[in-house]
Amino acid sequence: MPPGERATMNYNGVVRVDAHAVRLQDYYYFKITPEILKAIDKAQVDEFGDVQIGDYAVLVGMHVATREITDWVWATFWWHDKPDQGPYAQDRPDALKSPWRNYLMNTTLSMDTPLEPDGSPKIVFNPYIEGKFANGPVSNCMTCHNRSTSPSLGEEFCGALPITRGSGDYPPQDPRRYTRTHLSFLWSLLLRPQPLAPCAAGGSG
Image (tube, rainbow, N blue to C red; front, top):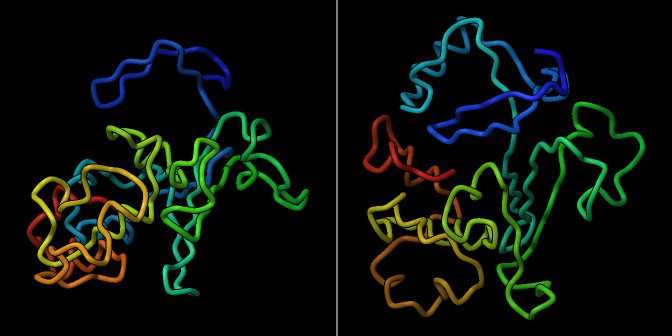
């Protein structure tokens, strides 16, 4: 389908009649090889069960966190079809070229600050990751990762839900912390300590 042409898209049962085609080259992507498929099979992730050799893996969104400070540095990146418009497109260097120029970024060092204009805690989310959840578009990725504990805080998505923001969600003085191990913001330690661990099928990134 030529880029820009209107189309009907069915994604997980959600039908969009105003979708339009986009060039594969506008994304970061790679082709699934036998070696990659073998690694996917070894990971035993249910969501990748239909992947086949020759398919393309396309990056639409991701979180990046680095432990440079106690509460880490949190950044989220997402693909956008109009990446040069809006507040997240400002101040990007000219040296940033496609396909990376088609991704936008937001970042935070805190669950709370800088405060939103209405005085509420900082919002930093990824539309492809948290956007599907209730309150996802007004959430904070650090607040979600702050819930990574063992045992988990709940059954649904290993206690990651409800998606929210602000340090008041699960504060240091919360009594539940006295019976749990804080996993240093890492969901992977809970979701994938070993193959087919409990909660892995319904985990959050």
